[in-house]
Image 1 (cartoon, each protein chain N blue to C red):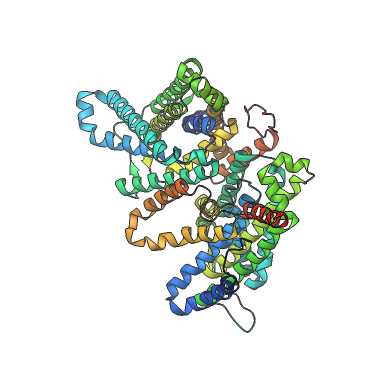
Image 2 (image 1 turned 45 degrees about the vertical axis):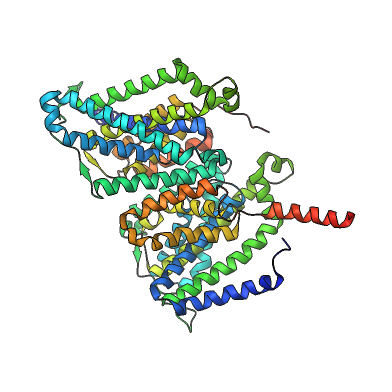
Length: 303
Length: 326
């Protein structure tokens, strides 16, 4: 039981990473019907920027801001930079192309992913980079016999906070209403005075910023980052998006959490080597029986 | 067709093309013969995905899985049982086709991006399974090595030039078959499904069977490419069949133009020759490649050589009516 609970917590931790990345995929998909393959690389770039900020600013931070202030600054700076990168990528690589249809946009997204990934490799080098160890306290806390690290609690806290904030923004603000309206029916939304391009820009600010925050947290959690990790996380997060029902934001969050828990339980009780196979098999089984994902609504066929 | 092309050029084009292909390996170094071999492999892979993606419009981003099944079938049966590689060519095609039938039957009803993610999952499962070495068959991350060269009894193909001719003969035969298929009832049914699935169903087309057929034929052709790849490299390992490989095939079809055979050839040329041409740029090579993909889609979203069948036929019809009335 103890092992199960610990694995559950571990699963929720990585699941919240998948969920946060999945939100970016899901928002873009909801409005543009585009699988944004570059999203995983936004996440990687955020992770690397956070790394550089933490390494370069370590001395400054510990004297002037304290540890938590330093981490906060690094995360916020990475998020803001990636919001900018996201807007630029959208402007350059997507906006001229998505009127031409969905498939050309997929190629363009793959191209953007390739560019970002290789630029990261050129700037930071092809080798693994390690997040500074001493910045992050490695304290264990015992809760009812379960061992948790402070970092895990922090990550779970930040993740759930971010998900809640995003949910609030999308469901309760005017901007969120514009996004939902555009996702529902782009032409009608435009007739109601919603500026399509501004909605897209808004999404490409939020998504990459969330990705960057996740990137910094992944760096703190695993300590090791590589320029190719965007592929793997991106693929898992995209799987989570589909699992939850594509374009459905709470679905993407739950999809991520479910995926993370499945992966951890799979590696604890089945085998570490086969855990990803297990995850993809579950995905395929879910889609065979629920073709629109776990929380996806059944959409009537358009004739 | 268009009627404007010089008839002399039309009759001379094919022999000329064959002559250039035959002369090419004699004129360049063996390195460039190898480049042309891999170009041929990408043409085969592009053609195979083109059946699924180009003709029927099914998003398949796990095609490297079928390619891997073909390559590993050849590798395992050849190294374990000594079955000649050329005999294994149809065997690899059948295995990959059968595999495609089994895995796509339960998921064929999925649409668009849901099908896309399931095929990605399928491709990843194949790759991960190969790495995990089930039943000690696939050799884990190191793969299977020591595959024999293909032999016709009297003639053993073990040189770059030999492989070059082998792959391009297979490409030639595949193109002939695919062009006939495109113009057949099956090809028309496929295109009808791509353009409007509901209308296709209403017109009495058995959508499910035709989609399955596309997957099986596409996988079989990818299996053939896998066989040739395994024979050439003499070793197969899981890293050759990554998700990126599936993405490259996807790009070949879209850069060339959906459903167009000449388009696939151009797309494969772009994908396989581009990294060679820009080798001097070292690290920046892939950045340039990515930028080129974006720019290409900006200016030619339909691909470099989109299929013109519909347009050409309509023009023909108009011309005929014009003549009859005028």
